[in-house]
Amino acid sequence: MNENIFGQNIKLLRKRRGRTQDDVAVALDMKRSTVSGYENGVAEPGIEALLTFSTYYKIAVDTLLKIDLSKLGESELSQLEKGYDVFISGSKLRVLTTTVDNANNENIELVNHKASAGYRTGFADPEYIRVLPTFQLPFLSAERKYRTFQINGDSMLPIPDGSWVTGEFVQNWRLLRSGQAYIILTIEDGILFKVVEDRIDNEARLKLHSLNPAYEPYFIEIKDVREIWRFVHYISAELPEPNLPKNEFASSLAELKKEMAEIKARLKQGKLFE
Image 1 (tube, one colour):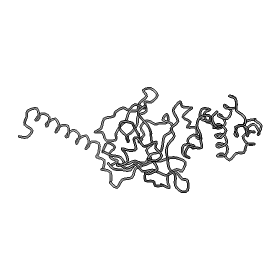
Image 2: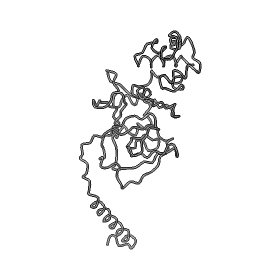
Image 3: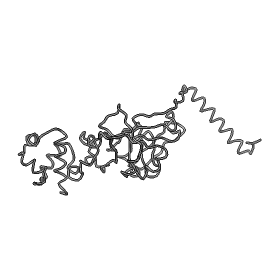
Image 4: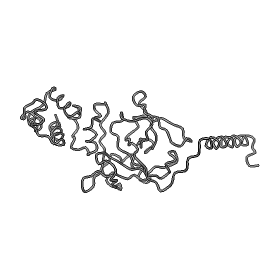
């Protein structure tokens, strides 16, 4: 085991729960000296001991052996302790690059239009993330990680172009819920804000829907996705357009289709500018 990662991890988890070595030893039916030996790297646990600690902390053996938990942010550790262990679900652990304020509280980084292009390649670069503007929102949970993105275009109307959309980091993509909105970072298209239809298990892809009915749904391969953030709220200086009653909307749509048909017919006849 490399650099006693296992020992460091179980010590960290024990202390985060406010438990002593005696507490853990009694719970696991071990001697306190055995627990101490594992934590300090004096003794190496066998498979039974590994499984015992895994069950006790509800964290996969692979995580305890391979991931230095001390390097994870508070939001990621909290998700892990709540049972969102991506090794258990068969996914690759996604370690998020993040920043904290002077009181060690996680910031909400701001990714505006100008920064969006760079975010596609710099999302995992600590130097890039460090220079992003940051702020705090006191009504959001301190145990979760948030980031705010400025959206572009009208595909998610009535959420206006230029709105600031805040998302909660999703570490385990198997917890996605169809019908919810997410901010998705992809290799090709950069940052997307869409309503998601989860097809990961059967098709290894997501179907993305816009709120604006003028835009057709489309698919993206999950292998092209780098980050997913669950939509929490948005901030905008613009008032949303009022919703038309269903019959008025249908009437307007029918009229628009009629006008389009007339334009196409005139184009074919060469009479558009007559």
